[in-house]
Image 1 (cartoon, rainbow, N blue to C red):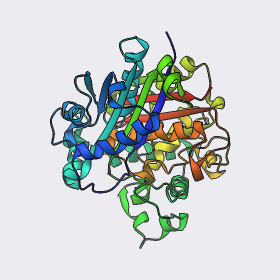
Image 2: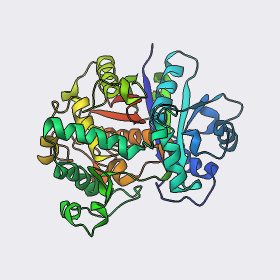
Image 3: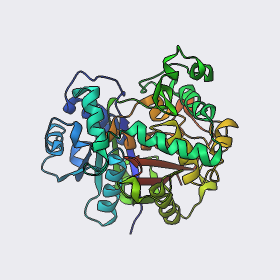
Length: 389
């Protein structure tokens, strides 16, 4: 089996309300990725479209988008694993290429969440849980992650100020990311000022500042086999390892409440495939839908021992200059979270880092990067390891 590489990446601006259609929204990320790869639609053998369909007014959007982007009659596939949809799409593209079925595949993720109201959005998020046994009780994403935060605090002594430190770091880099929704500074003092919106209660112990926001956006990744990658790209970024796992939808079926077991298992598989360990990662993107989610990711990925995530963030080791820079593009907390586009955006950041093209967010000479993308409350775990050698 030959190697598989990423030869082009693209992303729209993430915004609170996109004025155009999903066709136009997806085209924004697609155009940038195609220009980046230096190819045209005729060079793409297949496409993978990724979104969470409960937010889409268009049924079966893959067909509509393939037509609009000039990708007919090549096959197109539709993938959904909640918030990790485009990471799952990347795994499908990798498999299609590694099997020899296709040479070049475009993976497009999108979400236009502003098409429905906030109340409708929350109701649909609630349906990401088991609609028979959990969601009828009113469980929503903030409440689920709040339970994990409470468990982490009870077992390890994690504090509110540790959670706030994650958002402060996020905002440090969100300010310099022109694709992010939120580009304003955030300070720890905001979390202790009752008059500040950042301190507003959501689901104890999580506050407004601990939560990411819905957004509209798209991302695109162009994946190719080794022959095509060397033909088209001067800086191919190689897919070294891909790990995936799943967990019980119902929390009653879980055995861990201070972390996500699916993330641990996906990471173990990705590390094994890549032949590397946590200490070999130079830069990472993790799924920080809530501040506690980023802290759990530190531990699930092996960057910190269980209970020591708070020490990693407080010592600023996950800042750009630290030993393991994490989310130096602002993460979901600053960029926003257009569900189907999120994983592709994370991959784009790591690809740019490994090429040395991340601008003000650039980490010093990284060779291996990691993307950690979670679907739902740890229902789906995806970890991808990329390298520039």
